[in-house]
Length: 199
Image (cartoon, rainbow, N blue to C red; front, side):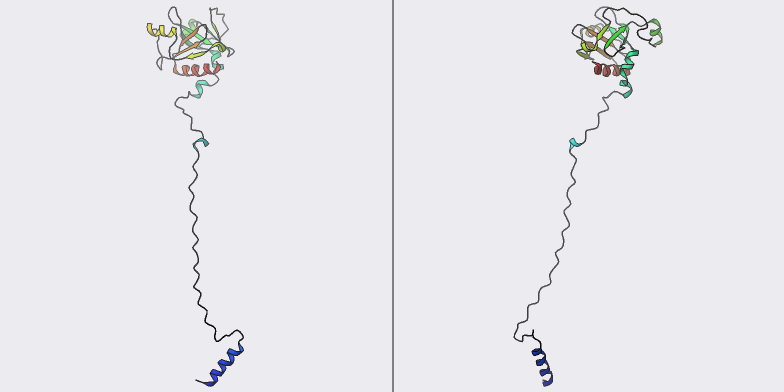
């Protein structure tokens, strides 16, 4: 071995203060593996509670807006209907109310029957026994023909029926009933819903 190389190496080792010839080589540290970041678990979307939004209205059983729009105003003009009673045959009558609190009815004139156009209520004086009924006195509105008067009319087959079949409205109080037969389906829905709101 070249003595100059050995002496030079020895002198280098001695000059290095951190060199220890007897020290054991330190073990090689294993490379650290980077931990893969886990992607966040997708959370299921929260579903809306059924009570958070109201169900859509059932329009199949609701009357058309025009049938109940401004019912008091329409009732003040009157409806041409057939009135059934305990005695005698059914007769045409004009049902109306000028204040929305009292129902009144009167016989139609010949002109009203022929043209179907009703005159202004209150213009002519009609004096008929028990021709008024207070809305507050009405305890029930029946459409099934279950009153005594309607049962008699059904039995005697005096009901004519209309565009939608039998369309009956009975205003029931403690003292009497006002039994009416409607000829037009649109008027029937208007009266059925409108009278229920006023009573």
